Structure formats: C-alpha cells, structure tokens
Length: 215
Ligand SMILES: N[C@@H](CCC(=O)N[C@@H](CS)C(=O)NCC(=O)O)C(=O)O
Image (cartoon, rainbow, N blue to C red; front, side, top):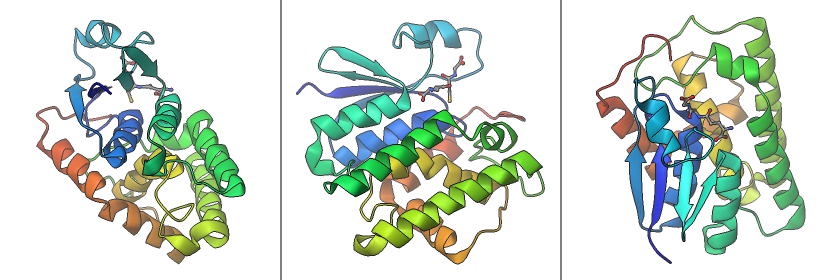
C-alpha cells in the first residue's frame, strides 16, 4: 500500500482533524501529514485542492480521496483490521458505530459553545444550558459503554476504537472549559489524554504559530 496522506487543519482548533489523525496514528502506518491553516485567505482554495468537500480532514489512500471524519475512520478500520478500530464482538461493534455516529451527527451546542482550543484554558466560558445538556448525554454514553464493555481496557469499548477517536476532542473540551465530571468519565478522560498519539498532537498544537481569540 502506498503511504497514506492526511490533510488536517490547525491542530489547536480542528477537532474533526484530530479524530481522523488519531485513527491513522493507531494503525501504525506511514503517513504524510499536510496541515492547512484555517481562517486564511487561501484556506478554502488549499483545502479544495485536496478535499472535494472543501473541509478537513481528508485521507488519500491508494489513489482514493476519502473525506468526512467518520468515513475516514470506517475506511481505516476496514483497511487495517489489526488496529482494532472496530471491536470484534458484534454488540460492541454495533455500539461503537452508534456512539460514533451520534457524535458525528450531534452535540451542536457543545461544539458551538465549547469549541476545541488546545492553546488556552477557558474555565468559566461555554457552560450554556444547552452545552451542559450535551455534557450530560456524552457522560451518559461514556458511563454506559464503560460499564458494559470496559473490562478489557480503559476505553469506551475496552481497547481504543473509532468511538474513542470521535470523542477525543470532547475530552480536550472538558479540560479546557473546566467541566466537572463523575469519576468514571474523569478516568476515561485521563486514559485518552495519556495516549501517546494524543500527547503528540497536543504538543504540536501548542507549538503552532496560529492563535485564534475565538476558535
Ligand atoms: N463533517 C465534517 C466536518 C469537517 C469540518 O467542518 N472541518 C472544518 C475544520 S474542523 C473545516 O474544514 N473548515 C474549513 C472551512 O470551513 O473553511 C467531518 O466530519 O469531517
């Protein structure tokens, strides 16, 4: 297989990019990374030359371009089955897909009011009633997954799967905005933050030259 190429946005702010990047990172495959700075005059043109939707992330794999973070994760799960991005057991696999799809399709208030920001702590901001309702649903999902499937590891379905990639930016948001969590959710957040790939991404995000006041 030719090396993969992943197009991402600013690591400090592009939560959709983080999801796909984690998926690629856990496959262990060689990949080229192209970072396109968001909110610049040429951003749209640069992304469009690599991604037909005009959005990041986009994955170039064996001559095919795949866009949409969840589709990228599904393709990676299919092409790299040993990476375990989808659990083997059918019930866990079904739930992984359901909670990943719920993240992809929903939680608009959480995404609007607590945008990912790896450059600043924003305690005291973002905790609108609608965002806090999303926090309750997210932590309900996490606690349910951990109770039902968490015996074999610290992640939602035990081992790291595409569901964890989808929720990883939410973990960073809870940290940035100082959201108080139940012990199970807090332990899950720690497991995500301790991932080597997550530390690599965060480190690169902090070193980026671009800083946005309001991501
Ligand atoms: N549904 C898409 C969302 C992608 C998205 O909105 N990406 C943002 C960055 S996080 C983007 O490309 N923005 C560039 C722009 O709108 O110019 C996915 O899951 O990949």
